[in-house]
Length: 361
Figure (cartoon, rainbow, N blue to C red):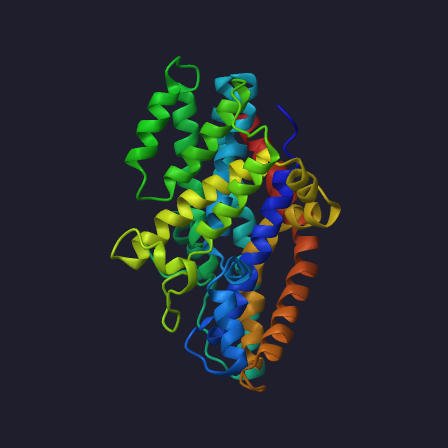
């Protein structure tokens, strides 16, 4: 099996797309609208009704995150077939996720205080909230999240344990793929089927099954088709279905159609990217590897800076230029902070989690 460093680049690109999705929503949500007149409206419709809308569509990237988690978390076990690997991974998972989240929540708390003092906003968050959000609500749910992007962490945590459990019970079972398929079908209406898919792909690769296409043309067709599927417009106010997408309504329920198309499109894209050597080389490029390296830090840190720069939204007219300017500020502050956050906090959580696992396991 080839090295999987390119997945880091894929994760990085997906993370930065999610950030731009949130910036568009915060600074100029009308940029997605399809009922705008004039040349600007025509351009917006071209973007909205084509795969170009992926530049501001974060949900497909989240699906890719979940596939990557299932794939990467199962990699070491599938390679060595040692149950102790799963025990150690299970012990590490909670602190590995929560320690960086706690410090990101502290940063959000500080930004709230600065915003309240400087811009006379009325954000209400206590030290107790920092702890409750970090250690309870983010991983287990139950309350409104101050950092809305962290809704994925609950799925990351429970999806991880689902992967570990399936591998522990069936990882060495002769008919494990039948079990994986049954579990996939039973969880099809949830995000957890995506974790199972990623885990299954990794298992297939380690068992020397080919999941790629030998013909380059077939890989390209699969990638193009998957990009069309995952760019199906998200159900939003002001965004209508047009172009090729009006012929892709599988169900009368727009949201249900969206979820299924994005789900299967993301899986197809993952396979397609594995099949095309040029895509692997692309994601192995240094800028994308750097983006992947800081991606988790960027993901959990961008919302605090977005909230801070929202204070400037009412100072300037809501235009495409102002959206890009404010988004650039969010990216800049997030990336600079994420570089040091990744070095001192994220890496620290990995080291601490490893030490904890060695002591307990």
